[in-house]
Length: 400
Image (cartoon, rainbow, N blue to C red; front, side, top):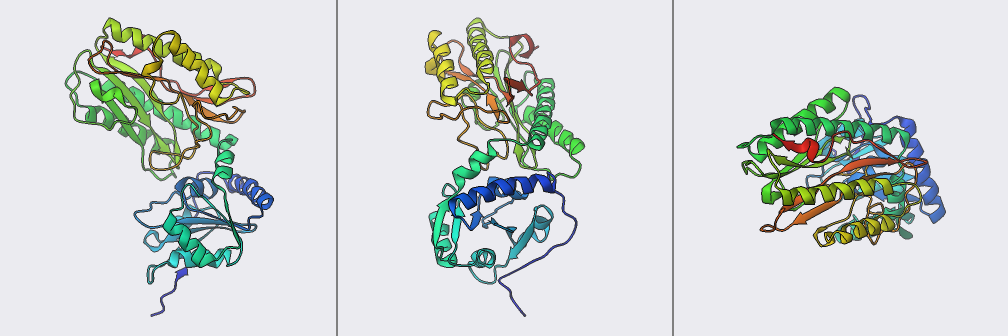
């Protein structure tokens, strides 16, 4: 039996999140950046870069994947276990590598790049072991880190991306209302979370009948479990007076959106109400700051001052917002667009960013718990467009 190192297995019809013209436009920008840096072939290995330039979102399960981009070709490299699905979900060509012998993955990549060329790669994703294999199999004349270049490109959304993100924000709202309806004393966090997740998955399937459905999730925390933004769901039962944290995360074709809200079960005590109102005020102040020409660091410092004036800054635990696009809790985020003191990126039209101040009051203190509100904003020519619809604040989110 002939056992090839790699082969092409193409069947079915291509079904992509965006039009071929959208992907060609992204690749054109990338190729210009490659030419400026003397890069002949890029070997992308991260889920976010591969999805951004090809549409294919891989499931690694211990196997490596790649997208190779040259001046003329765009080829995803996938494992045999996936058969033709990567081709159907990739803009451009696809090569399947076999596991008849070790490192056929790199032999498949080499079939596109050749040897002795200048290679671009993602230094923030490629492991030391895989970097050594890149050197061994491709024998590059030079290597160039293209991770930051790609990240900067992904920070600027196309009209098609913004349209998808807006639909994602609306789906997040659907999940929020389903969660609100499921809240009552005695209910477990996991039961409330499932109500929100199921509602979002059904809504995504209604809006995107040709999509792949995966990775949509909810973090719904109560009481002490609200102290961290990424705390997992538990079986804790809700009680009257509990602080709640509602977090819905629909995933559509690799694109993440989010809704995050503070709520209380039936009643809110005066100390908690004071903290909640202060965080809502910071949220509204932050929304007013997100406009073209503002830097991430400057916005952060202004909100810091807002909290410091109220003796609350010590309860802030992380930045005030981040970019949206191809990202999830499994992969990638455009770290260059995050509202932190050490990020000096200037906001520009076409960027999409959240405003999400959070205060965590330690257990045992008046008002204990984690308070967070989260809206998604598209930066426009003269300000921003808030695409989150679910309301925030005590007037709506004390659930009787």
